[in-house]
Amino acid sequence: MRRAGAVALNTFREAVRDRVLYNLVFFALLMMLAAILVGGISIGIEDLVIKSLGLSAISVIGLLIAVFIGVGLVYKEMDKRTLYALLAKPVRRWEFLLGKFGGLVLTLAVNTMAMAAGLFAALLYVKHHLERTDAVLLIAIYFILLKLTLVVALALLFSCYSTPLLAILYTSALYIAGLFVEEMRTFHSTAANPLLEALLRGLSYLLPNFENFNVMAAAAHGREIPGALVLQNTVYAALYSVIVLLVAAAVFSRRNLK
Amino acid sequence: MPGHAIEIENLTKDYPFGFLHLRKKRSLDGLTMQVESGEVFGFLGPNGAGKSTTIKLLVGLIFPEAGTARILGKPITDIAMHGDIGYLPEQPYFYDYLTAAEVLDYFARFHDLTAADRHERVARMLRKVGLETARKIQLRKYSKGMLQRVGLAQAILHDPKVVILDEPMSGLDPIGRREVRDIILELKREGRTVLFSTHILSDAEMLCDRVGVIVGGKLRGIGAPGEIVGMKAQGMEILFELRESGSSARAVLAKAIETGDRYRLQVSEQELYGVLEQLRAVGAKILSVAQIKASLEEYFMNLIEADRAQAAAVEVSGK
Image 1 (cartoon, chains in turn brown, blue):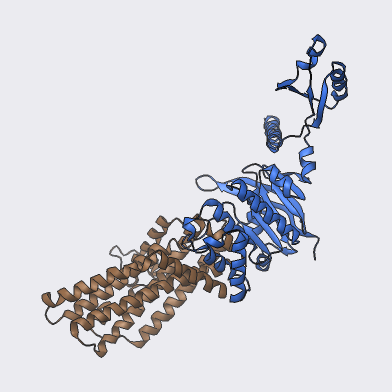
Image 2 (tube, chains in turn orange, red):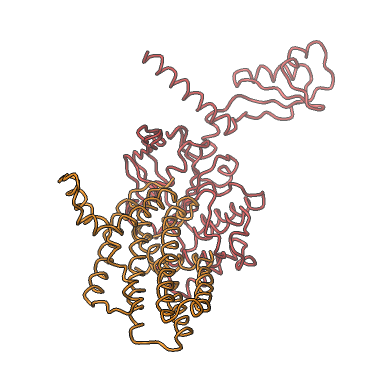
């Protein structure tokens, strides 16, 4: 774990020096602009607009980082051959993968926390105070982070054996498909095709369920989020990520570096 | 303590090619050899001969189709073996957002070193490879030669018993080459085993206790550098001066090459004494008689030609 930690810290340092965290400037500008404009165009729902906009921005920016940095995590190291000297050290390939995964998740966590702070600052500016129901936003942000963790695991898997372009396509396709798993489970074919129905139902259990992580609307309206869902999403994201990382480790452990 | 630092047995590697990667090209064909503890071993061969493939197999970057290898008695699949080896990749490239000190500290973290030990070793290595003053500059601003030095520093940072260097002199200017040679000799003095690949014979002659020559994925010769070069002696060269060239000397001079006021004459070993007698008879002053050794290029070309001839013969007999 010490070696995976060294890789993780280096991955975080790379993200910082590659100016990945500069997106925070964009987020800060967006929040400032929204806070200034929202008072003029919406009466009584200022906080709803700020919350919705803030959560959506946190999710989209996080997804862009998770996908675009994630698909290059392993490929870039192979392509630039920075991996050669490293893998000659006493470090196992799965430790390297775990480190790359941990490093990007750490980057996303820092980034998400900074954006969350920006969101609360914008809310405070608009409402001049925070309410107890605003704490639900923290759960929504936690779910976004869980979702991003899962996306990083998928992007890392594709990064082990595919080019970044294809890995972006695969990861994006899985993410979009994962937003519709409930529909797939309840799908009743108009043509009454039982084979298609069974196939979709089976697929819906295999695909990552990203729908469960989306509580942005509820959080924006200050509705309570059940503790069971928090536990379920935490366990689901952890288990699914572990399984994806195990597959990635199996793929990468026999990969010949050219 | 095993006698052999590196033992390679029947190591074979294929690379897939073609649209679906269904076809395979044999890059290394049943390589068997040993590197003794404490020796400097040169792995010689033209580009694409299988040198880097062998080295990558040894350090676990690629996996063999067949065969095994052991370093210091440990199988190359054993992760503990990696603590005892240092590796410099060919044309090394490191994280360009890090400084030399940071990249060395990063690599040192994979060995069981305390923070104080890491800092001391990083400083010592930077001094050793002459990068002390450039320690805080990001690697993106480094020249190829400076990156090579960083590569060497990370390879020997943890005092490995076996050091494996893939084309360590590649791309270096004469001063850089000299510095790398000095480091290799220092490693030998410290009792470490060094295996390095090169296609430059002068490097091998200067540094190696033994060399192995690989062509077309097959080991074609192994031994002391002198033996390898001597294997293909192509005759004798006589260097002489001749003040007056009368008609009696014409027959001898017809075959000689005139360079300034001297002549060079190449003859076979069988002809040597007869020709020397003729030269003495015409009053020539013999300056030197030396064995003509094939250059490495010629040696390789001979091997490659032999390979092609063999392949053609197999093709003809197949028809």
